[in-house]
Length: 393
Image 1 (cartoon, rainbow, N blue to C red):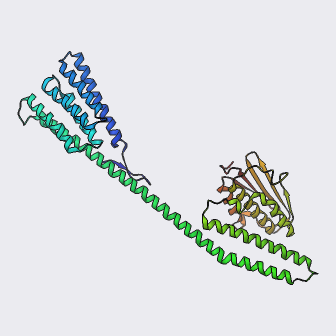
Image 2: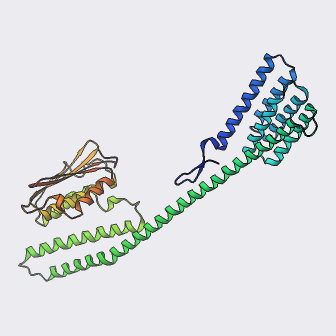
Image 3: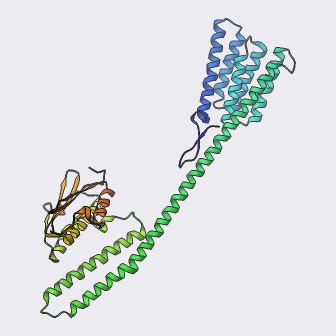
């Protein structure tokens, strides 16, 4: 039995042993044999019994497609009539064998079908040949009928077995995927717990310490008080974003990621950096953010995080002015951050941080691309993202 394997859906029968296709081939052979027999009967001007048996066998083949037992019985009667009355009976007898194969392929029990077909045909051929019960032609007919019934039953059983194996393989894949999802959920919960217990706690403590220090600072140190106030507000923002990230980790990835980061908040980010004495020049569309077209939440979040990381890198590793540009070009959102290099700053290729990798991954995750323009004096990061999160332009 020829079988081919399938990776996740289990094994399948080779195409030419498929039950449905094999049944159609058998039907085509039966019709072809009857057509040839009918044409020969008409051209040779043989007795009408041959033509009548051919027509009856054809009707039985058609009936067997809906009523297997009745159709088989009609074909058998046609073969018996041809054996007893007609000049030729080979074609109806052959059609009995093929019809028997067809009905057993489609679910008729082999033993009753074989008994229904073999006994009448055997008796009719014995009477016609006159050679007694040991007639070679009659025994050949019986052997072919039994072989047809056995073959049909075996193929159907094999198909059922392989279907059960395929379903079992699908169930195994579903169980595996469920186990993976549960493992991911457990890992997300563990990360959420670690963030809550460690990072969240430490951020809250830093915020409280900054608040206490701000109260203790004297009035003649207004600059220090302002810096502490800005630092405290930054800690509070980090704490809020951390809590939002914890909610997503705990409840799944289906939430709106825009709740954590949104490109429409870039103006607030720029103001925060300016309050910390970071020279940022923002080139934003007029009436920002109201002028922005609808943007997919995941794209908006990716644009915000890319800009945030690029500004952070520019503040840490660059010198002088930092330029932030946000514009819409057709169906794409373009976010660019440019800064001058310090004289001793290494090139991006020599860096060992994960900032560029993270920005690249964020852009790719929403079907966009990240372009890096790196030379000894200037460094620019440009993200090009489709507004709806489609493929990379």
